[in-house]
Length: 101
Image (cartoon, rainbow, N blue to C red):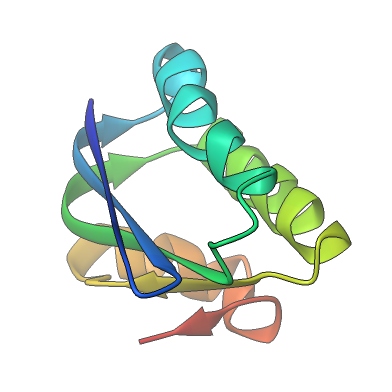
């Protein structure tokens, strides 16, 4: 999976491309960890437009992201969710935990 982080006006977007699974946990964590302590960043959007697969470990990584950002008072939004990825998130009831745009 490829990650790209873009920051603008207090908002950060983490764009993901490829499979979001256990093998990508280091890349994902490396993408969001600097944002935890960044005072200028108030919210994070995780863009799933380029993701065609995610597994249960990816769900766990999203929950860890939510916990870390929530502890700092930062909002997390999931965007670009479609196809199988959308189904997995719906089955896991992630719409109750995240705003899905």
